[in-house]
Image (cartoon, rainbow, N blue to C red):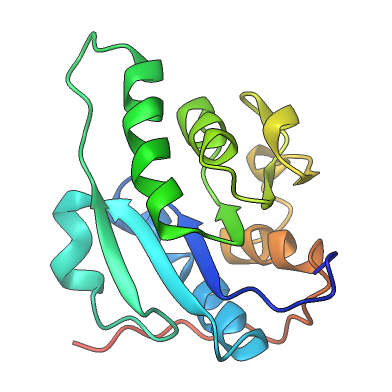
Length: 163
């Protein structure tokens, strides 16, 4: 990490459907391996919380509600920012690029925010180009690139989910 101090609280954001969310399991275990003392919180679609609660590398799984059709994205971003601010996260890894998450993490004052350079990516402190649509790598590999930006050594990914 850039600051030289290990994060105490890390937020990982992936709030879409099950498949894309599961492909972030190696990110979580790699983060926990790099920062074993840190509290790692995974923000996921609220329907997935119970299924993912025992995922390796996660201290807590928090549900994010689906927004009603037509509701302004900025209201959801503001509500989430207030919630995240209370947790005092040091680092946010945003695996799905949505402007409401970029804005929320910025408003929450999370000092280090890494993600893909899409949808208001300028609010991130570290960003990488989003080349997932090219299909040159597996999605797990693309997700792990977010950790490489932080200087975290990435090994061969392991996909585990205890049942």
